[in-house]
Length: 114
Image (cartoon, rainbow, N blue to C red; front, side, top):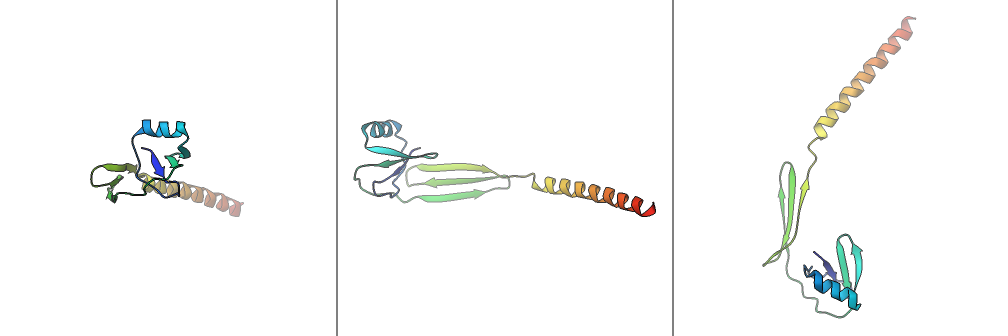
């Protein structure tokens, strides 16, 4: 997927026509703006017609799905894997802190009795 920006800096519809993008870059009719995500800016005047895009989000317990679609095709989709280990890490941290506190208290008590 190649994202496209007009000469004026306005976003246009992305394209999957990599051959055309390659030719535009080679002929000097476009320049690379960003490499990640790959974005080009056209150096000639074009129409700024864009299709309406609908964004959908599917929230799950372990993953979140995101999708952007037009009337005809899917423009963007992604799946984000959520962290499920946070609770376990917090419990582990609490145990370690408890052990440290207990051992510190034992050192304090031994100093008092000396």
